[in-house]
Length: 274
Length: 153
Image (cartoon, rainbow over all chains, first blue to last red):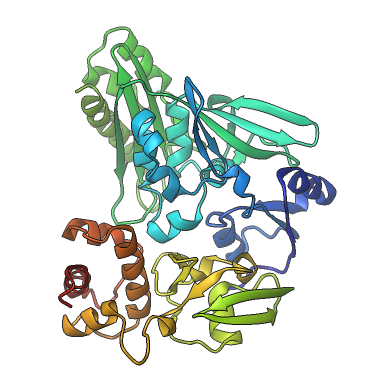
């Protein structure tokens, strides 16, 4: 299957990429690893008339210790997130979750920024960075701004990014030894999660992100509130679906997803509480 | 658009449409048909080849994205008429049945051992999760990769 024809522009810098998308407007799309965009284009579910290739902006591929957080360049590939010693030490939940994206070939190409900007509720990294309280740094023609992960996801494949803005950095707070767990329930290797849970806990503090439990990745704040007020893991897990309105599809009904979320959140919090 | 790539050690220059998929370029422009197309949706791994030394699914890469890169296809792994140790291991361990997934399996397996030279059986299974064998001949594929890692074919 061939994508519809498009003009291809290769950006030599972030500034040039932003100026190119500003020039071509909403018909232009950024191309990073292409592992979310190209499948959509091949199915003709997306048909941008211009692709601005940012895949060679190697200055946006990095993982740096920035004191209280780890700064990750948007073009860092899943494989590099998965195998990063810095992340293994300070944000092991994110490194582990990155190792569950797609399969090795996908992880050689796909990028963390691409996955987040695509804003797919079924993807692992949006919900994981949401659970971790990440901040996204975006650059546009009118400057740079920071968006909290909890304010970023607006709807199915919709984010707070403006058409001329590019996600450049993901800032993830250090976990400081918090317990954590990543639960991905699927039927076949490499599938998207039917439901997934990314969770961490440090005493009464916790964060829980849900994968594929609605039109956006979901921050299960009610679970964290329950843990904070001293509820047991099992009781807190019953709040798993409080903020979620999951879809029914070929894999699962909405009710089944809600049940699954309760079970997986319980398992995740049990593991994170050890 | 003009692209320049090194394929199996040989420099190739071509004029292509930007929407040309890497696998289509390799098969149709360069007539290297060892790489198969299976699902064409980045699920099955039949089209796996190496881009700068790492396995990728070439149905989900544009040829223009590979401009300036080093590519290796299944045709490029045997050297001097001698099979690559991974090919030899697949032959010795009956790691293929119909052969449709085999080029992609071999390329993914070579990439896997490059990243993890001594994998456990579980690591081999996880490492090949992006490659489907519709004959379901996974057992011997995994044995082949483990045999290659041990150097005993």
